[in-house]
Length: 161
Ligand SMILES: Nc1ncnc2c1ncn2[C@@H]1O[C@H](COP(=O)(O)OP(=O)(O)O)[C@@H](O)[C@H]1O
Ligand SMILES: [Mg+2]
Image (cartoon, rainbow, N blue to C red; front, side, top):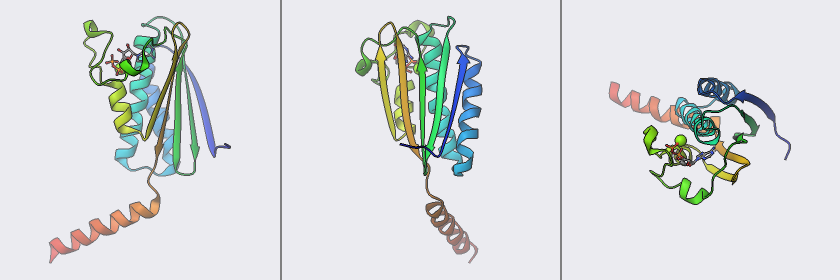
């Protein structure tokens, strides 16, 4: 598939770079004119995956996190890769409330949040080699947003009567 746009970022596995990833996600999505909710969902999902790469993948040791944003039509694709410890059992890792680090007071809800906020989440991992999280989200078409705006303005009209 040829994408409309593509941006890749390589960042050190530092938790402060999570903020950078959030801003990058917002900047990449901006031309698709997302709703505020869509933007918040995307940024949150990206930051959960980046945090996982830093905390779990590299266990706060040195390494690189690779992020690629792609867009095609009204769809945004994000992939987040680390070359860290990997995940032995991906199915178990994705269960709500499952965490391998309860001592760090992790909530175990990172993957659940990603699945709730994105349309698709796919995790591939090789123990000892690393993990890739691929996510997709469709940004609502402008026409649908205009329909919504019409609905809101007609609601506004009716309250004025
Ligand atoms: N990039 C990763 N590398 C290694 N393990 C990971 C990675 N991402 C997630 N995991 C594993 O999946 C579990 C669940 O992740 P998540 O749902 O985000 O919960 P939490 O981060 O709160 O533990 C983690 O506790 C960890 O064991
Ligand atoms: Mg997490």
